[in-house]
Length: 310
Ligand code: GLV
Image (cartoon, rainbow, N blue to C red; front, side):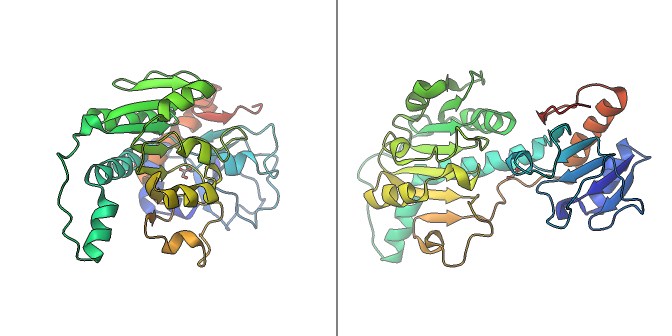
């Protein structure tokens, strides 16, 4: 079986060794290298390279080298009969849970106000007892593999966690909601909002002025989904009014974020360049090997985002 690796993060000896440990007979090519006849069976990519204009008829499936596959699902170069499966990596989910916990703890300490006071050498004494974790309401949007992991880790840490997803899901320790009405209830009076939804026509611009208006005053918002989830003007307005106290942004409509974008210099925005969760060599290799095993046995691929027709 020939696999075209078209993501720099997969160009590592550790990834190839972990994959070969499960699938010793695979032939691996690192884009832009291709087999002489141009045929391969599996394409691994997070985003198709510009130079890959036509995919061969031999292509059996695409393996999305990331948790979110919207950028592949909307790519017309992938014929609709080709299945797309995505990576599921516990280590990646754990990194994102760490990021979300960081934002939760930052809100507990009101880190942004602390930093602003420090910059002004302002000794601003506490005006009451500090909140405890269980008094902090955290809303997690999206309860897929990563969202559920994040929500349950935050609950395990003692935060009061509400989770929302399109269809109903149960997550231990988390109060869950679904549907339009459920969204309002899930985010009502939230002190921290973590977005981990997939980007679809329904979730585009979901981080809107209307949603921010439901949060508790000074809430911290983390967009760990896609740039398209965020109404940028609404965020700037909510920061201005104080409804949102601070934002952590990891994904952007245009990446890299343009050097003159307003977000870079905003004192209450922390920018991380799409690194909240990086697939790991072993997690990614095992997830791909699970797909190869299933394909070879004629079973449905695990973690399909588009079934296609095998
Ligand atoms: C990151 O954005 C991913 O899709 O894994």
